Amino acid sequence: MTKIGVDPRPLDDIGTDAVQRILDALGSEVTSATLDKEDLAAELAWFVAVYRGGVVHADRGLAKDREARMTNIRNAARQIIRALDDDVWSLISRIRKTKESSHRAYPTRYPTNPYKEKLDATMERLVEDIEHWFNPSAPPYFLHVPGPPGSTWGARRSRSPFERLVGDLAELFGKQFDLKATFHRRASDNVPDSPVIRFVEQVLKEFRITHQRRPYSRESIAKALSDARTGRARNKR
Image (cartoon, rainbow, N blue to C red; front, side, top):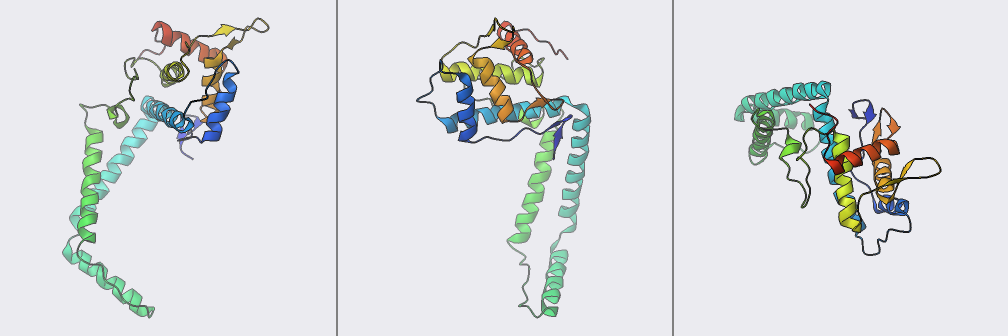
């Protein structure tokens, strides 16, 4: 399984059953009769994808490993483009024909076109995309993707990926339920509580987002919410 730091990779998306559990966690004071569950799941998956990209980008070890793998892929693609000329393609076709004939199967040939041209185009596109990723004048790929309408993601580059995720989820909460992303502390145990706290908590649970393999505490969620509301940035780089 691919890891992000010491934590398992979050899920790419969730189903409507998971969305229902998120809605159930909000409590009876939040109504969602007209909410589109599939639309909400897609928006949540978007923000989690941005979070995942941010975590990978912030991890220098993972970034270095990714750069090495991208370099290897680019070099291999270039080598295939150089080596796979018409003569080699014809040779491969004859090898296939001989192999199939030896097994008394109907022999087939690799046609020169369109398969070779398609493979060449794929390799060239792969090199082109990797070159774009390596472009030092541009940020990594996930920063090129435009944010969803109304999102302020990217405006606070100094925040940690988790803080940005909580801030985005708070904005999504306000948009979907027309409620302010505020919280209070329970009189019984002083633990942060509110619909938005429970919303973020359940979203993290459904996407399996953890910190050092442990669920994020409500204190961490509340702190990130407060920082997002006041504009503070705890993780300056």
